[in-house]
Length: 203
Image (cartoon, rainbow, N blue to C red):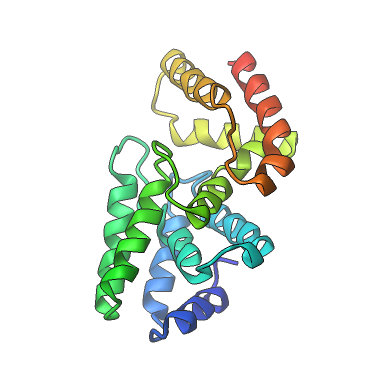
């Protein structure tokens, strides 16, 4: 679903011009060398999940656009990927004369994918849950995710990677709930915890 047809629907919802060049730039960015999980397939998966809960969101177009941009800039050793991705989205929105409220909203949504704070509303919680949906995927799919994350950090020595990865996995397990919305909690929570415990034990 990370294709020009999907992009066009979002542009039409905003009342923007086609922006085909930006669409192509975003797809190319997600297909760039060195990406193994943070790819166009991840964005497509997010958009598929969004379609399933579209009836339960207030502002579909903002969530959809935020997903397109949220991993636009991805460098494994950078601490500013989300900020840099949000800045790209802001430049795009300003070039299309988007309103200040629209710009602020996209910035907030993209920065929420840092997963270091609480969602301010239901739509944002849906976005966060969708971004974490891989954690609750079928075990064979989740295992590929772990392999791909390791590939993205292949320059990190094994013992350092394992230590840091365990901390991340246990931080999710320590949460009272991984998924904030009832829909994703009921659908993915149990499997996510099983996947995380297994992955941590295998490190």
